[in-house]
Image (cartoon, rainbow, N blue to C red; front, side, top):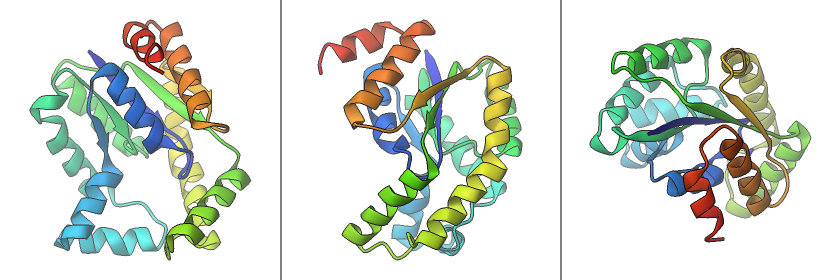
Length: 202
């Protein structure tokens, strides 16, 4: 069983790397962003609330996020492990997740942090915004999300570092290079069988 979390500032490439980790370890990626976007696309009441919050560059309240994650972790495909992407993002969410996992006798196994320079992330996201016509990715909104990330999320990174769970990986460069760094770091922590198999397919 592998219960992982991947963290990093918005635009650091968490989604791409999460998909590769998920495939290598045969565990589902549980992305709060995907769940939020699904609700927005369906026009649900929750989706409308989330859209207004995200358009302002802020995070969705813990109560809404926790409820979504709890329901997802109870699904059958998450019974033997999972990779969380985008959750938890605050110390309150960390406490909620700890209690939720502990209630089933589980804990997180490792936390992968993608480290990336803020100016480079802004450049990446502005380029994507221009290519995709994403109104929510103005430079002001992007930088605001970076500030929110630093103020609310970095304390949880420190908490996981103190537990010895944090694995810091350089998130800049070619996508494949970042993947190799992640798998190598996981292998060093003893999560090597799936990594070795995955590396042999690339």
